[in-house]
Structures are given as structure tokens and as C-alpha cells.
Length: 218
Image (tube, rainbow, N blue to C red; front, side, top):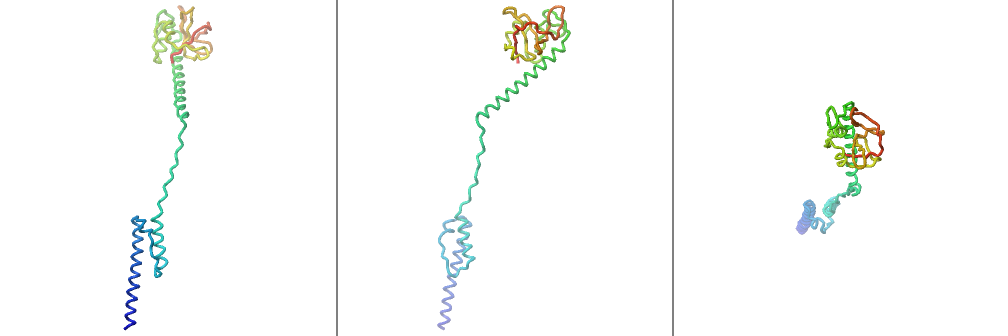
């Protein structure tokens, strides 16, 4: 009778103890899953009756809940220097301007060559007869440059540059004192296209006077 009472008491005592341990372990795991670090990582009694696998589960749950995830590293992309960014558009504009000038020069020389042999007539502006200013007026209209049929006015509108910067397609003006009396289209190799005078025709002629002025329009 006494032995049986002792067995029942011990069973109740240790059965309650085991249930409490299982409840504590389950609470810790649940806390780790829902993100309650204080409860998951808090002090837990380690009873002598708890097996090694149960202790490992509690430790793993506590460790995973208390360690914050590592932040991903963000590498800064290199920023090009301000000078490089500024110089690139300038270089592009210069290349574009050069290409445009070469294209216009090619059009001018092609169009004036088509007029070879056209008779000179004073005051004529084409399309079959020309004087010197009428010829440059007619040809430059092909590239969108509007000129009047008067040599001094054409020179006044031009950008004057030194001989070292002259380009095929530029206009060459001949002066008598300060008065511009003749104009032609520079063709390179010391030659020009022009309508010389009465009795002559449009053609490619030698530049006879090195005192000419170079005028640019593009």
C-alpha cells in the first residue's frame, strides 16, 4: 500500500515535470518561428531528463532567431569624370561640323562642274548663262546659302579666313584696292571655278593673283 502510493506520487511528479519541459521547448521553437527573440533566446532550464536531440533543437532555434540577416553589399558604380563628360559632346559636335562642311563642299564642286562651258553674260544668274557673282549665287543656293548677285556684298557676308585655312568649295575674292571685283569657287591645287569675262565660259581656271581673299559660308 505504501509502495503503491510512492509509485503514484513519483509518476505524477515526473510526468508533470516532463510535460513542463516539453511545453517550454515547444514555446521556444514557436517563438523563434514568429520572431520573438527575447522569448526564443531567453534562459531555458535544461532538465536532466531532456534528451540531447531536444537540447540541439532549442539551441538551433535560439541561434537562428537572434542572428540578424547580413545586409547585401552594394558596390558603387564608377562615375565618369566631369571633364570626360564635357569633352565628349564637344568632340562630337566638331566631328559633325567637319562632316557637314565636307558634304557641302562636295555638293558645291559637283554642281559647279555641271555648269562647265556655260557662257559669260554680265548680270546673268543662270541656269544657262552667268557672270562671276551669278555663278556663285546659283551654286551656293544648292546648299541653302542665299547670296546676292554682287561681289562686294558676297564678301561682306562671308567669314574671311587666311589662305592656310581655305578649303575646296570656299569662295575666293579678288580686290582692286578695297573693292572686290571678281569671285570664284576654290577647287584646290591653286585653281578655281569661275565665269571669267565676256567671250569666255564657266570652267576650271588657274588662280592668277595670290592676293585674293578667302571667304567661308559653312
